[in-house]
Image 1 (cartoon, rainbow, N blue to C red):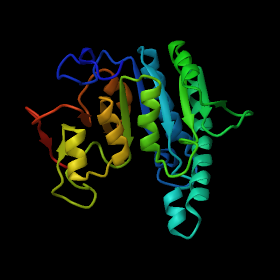
Image 2 (cartoon, rainbow, N blue to C red):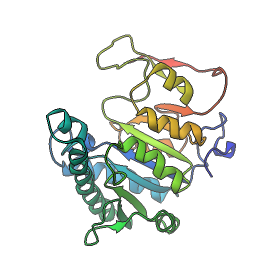
Image 3 (cartoon, one colour):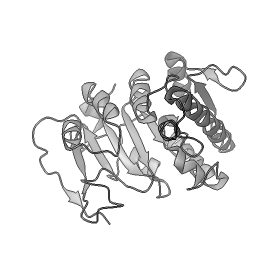
Image 4 (cartoon, rainbow, N blue to C red):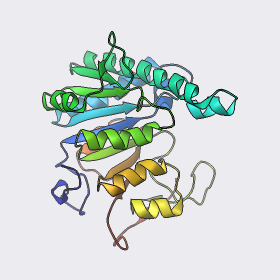
Length: 265
């Protein structure tokens, strides 16, 4: 399903109006609204956008981060054993998953949480074929607990889950940036945003907005990715409609004909 040129009505490989199954990555920081914990107003706003996309015919699966509670890498830097710190972070993603499930279901959309760590009382186990069946029935599927193993970022898990459920594209939402930039726009005023870029070029330039392992997985399997900001209301539905927001990252070979950059503002 992924990598088909039929996804595009404009540029080859561009996920557009033909997208029917997507994997949305949400950072944990979004859930906290910039603070520790969960901001119900923020999560409700996300749920409305997801519900809107589903009503328009999209099949939506979601990977949720846990950075609003714990970040394993940061805990390990403060002296905690890395694998234990990562497991703590995974539990944070499950808390976010359950909160998002509640708010999406309040929008009238059936939702299932699948956890990579067995938690039979609150979530299904992660079973790709079952997830696909849920999506085909119009349900949202939220993947919690990362990969269930330490040392894997949720960016990388997003690419892996997207491939297993045969998604057409990965929608990689980010906080504070609205796409892939030549440098960090929060610290470098000269940074410019790419309208599109190949995975190979993003890796060559060492761009950090998405983990290199996630870029590499998508590149090897010809799975397009859109990196965009969550700040605009309705951005998820806009991406599904084919509006060109954020940055399209794809596996095209050779120079990017017509590639443009926008101001970092």
